Image 1: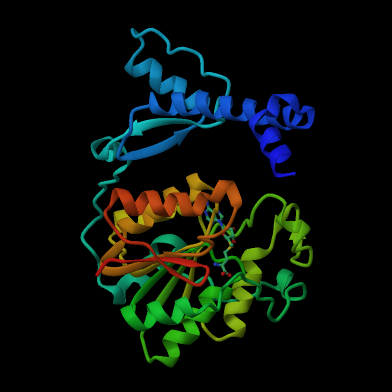
Image 2: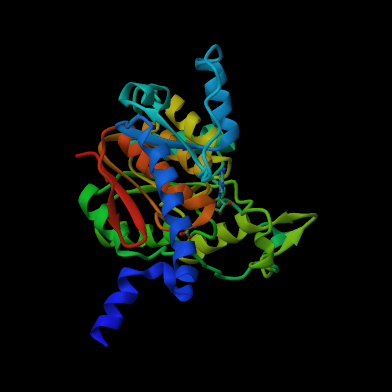
Length: 327
Ligand SMILES: C[S@@+](CC[C@H](N)C(=O)[O-])C[C@H]1O[C@@H](n2cnc3c(N)ncnc32)[C@H](O)[C@@H]1O
C-alpha cells in the first residue's frame, strides 16, 4: 500500500486525474508570475492615487508626451491605473482662500436676514395662505440625525454659530437646536440647503406637496422649525452650498461647528468640506454624515480622507459620522 502510494506521488505524470487538476493550477501560477513581474517593474511611491484610464492618458500627455508609450500590459491588466504622487504634488489640492475678517457672532443672524432676505425674517407671516392647508404640522425625517455625535461636538465646542450644509426637513438642525437650548447656549444654526432634495427624491417622499414641479421642502422645513419652536435659533439659507459657503467666507461669517451632509458624491463632498473648512473658526470642529456610505464608490470617505491628508488633520469616527477636531 505504502509503496504504491509513494509510487503515485513520485510519478504524478502517470495519473490522469492529477494531470487534470494540475493544468489550471499551472495556468494560475503562470498568471501570478506575469502579474508579479508587472508589479515589480512599477516604481513604489509614498502616496498612490487612482485614476481612470481616460484621466491617466491626460496626465501622461502633459508630462511625458515625448517618451515612447509603455509596452502593453501583460495578460492581466488591472481595471484601475495607478500612478505615483508625492507630497508636493498634493499642492494643487490645497485651498488657500482667505475669508474676510470675522464679524461678531451676535450680528450674524441680522446680517444674513438683511442681506439675503431684504430685512424680513423668512418666518414672518408664515405659512402663506396658499400653503397653510397643504403642510403637515410636522414631518421630520432624517438620517442619523439624532446621533450621539451632535451632543459630543456641541458639548465640546459650545458653539455660537453652527453651519449645517444639507438640512432637508430639518431633523438634525432641530435636534441641535434642542441640545443647545438644554445646555443654555445662545447659538444660531444656519441651514444651508437649496431645499430641492435630489433628482428622484419624490419617489421616496411623495407626501411632500409639489406645485408646478416645485417641491415644498422649504415650506415643510420652515413649518417643522416653527412647530418645534426653534425659529429664533434656526435660520435657513436656501441656496446652493457652493455659492453660500463662498459668500459666508466673503462676508466674514465664521462658524464654531460646520456639519457637512449635502451631496454624497466625491466632488460634492470635496467641495463642501473645503469650503466649509474655510469658514471654521480656529479650534472649531467640522464633521459630517455617511462616512461609510457606498455612494459614488465611497465618495464621502474618499473626500474626507484626502482632505485630512492634504491638511495634515486627523479623522475620527463617531457612529456614522466623520469628525475633524482642529484643537
Ligand atoms: C441627506 S439630506 C440632509 C439631511 C439632514 N442633515 C438630516 O440629518 O436631517 C441632504 C440635503 O442636501 C441638500 N443638498 C444636496 N446638494 C446640495 C447643494 N449642492 N446645495 C444645497 N443643498 C444641497 C438636499 O436638498 C437635501 O436636503
